[in-house]
Image (cartoon, rainbow, N blue to C red; front, side, top):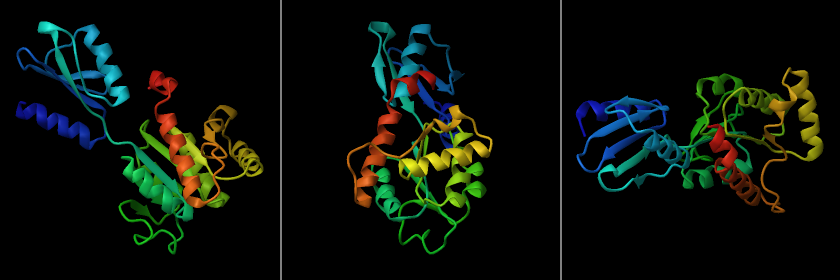
Length: 236
């Protein structure tokens, strides 16, 4: 790989931009594709671009084509992220599970006794209010957001930020009655029905979870399910 191409690829990865390196196997020529366009190198055939977009959406590198037209598509997508609002017991189970599943995990909670490195190893911790932190996180289509505090002072500002972002998943802990009250507050705050409908509430798949770790499993399973939904891929 040319040094200039490697430099551009590394820059795209640092900026969390979806990228792919397309190498023509016959002659080794390479094209760098960043954010839905050719960034450097030869232009691509239309058929390759279609396969390329599918590869980026599915996070899977692959070889396509036949004979002289064989190319290797190497996908360099940014890692998926999970933003957890509320450093509670469920978060203590959810954070390491998500980390193991390949997510970059952040925990936000203004309550200093909860948001500590001892309780949350291997994750980024922000001991601040969500509306102070979340605008700085560049929330994108590879980000999931979950609120867990049950406290409207903390959850509602986080949900407002989430609903105004491109996050692929938004979930909020609470019973159906709690969620109904949450919807009323968010509507009063100016959010419309379509926006609010993006919230998975009560959060998680219905697996009859009771214990904090079981609830964490149900949440992560729903996030993973949502990340692979065909409609999401179509819209991305």
